[in-house]
Image (cartoon, rainbow, N blue to C red; front, side):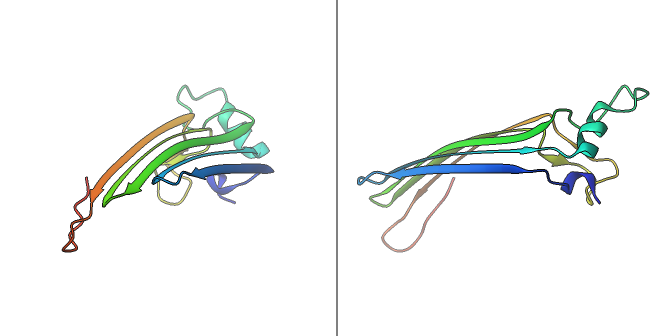
Length: 122
């Protein structure tokens, strides 16, 4: 089995709230146990100084976001972090890739809907 695609027991939860003036807020969290193989690979074999697999017993992710959508204006932003979860490199989940100790993501978008149908986005 491909190490980056193994799964332990876990849970996730999310919540969102929509205000009546176009604003929405949301947050989510997930946590799962890492498999014994993933934890062992994270500790390495003691011979490699560079281990590209994260250590740790659990994999976690959390995110928060906000959106405003009213009067032809759409604005949104989100921030997320993962720990011991995100695979990188090599296309098939093994090879030269690894599992990052931590990732941080920040995304924003702004759009305006013109009356004639054009919607530019940044």
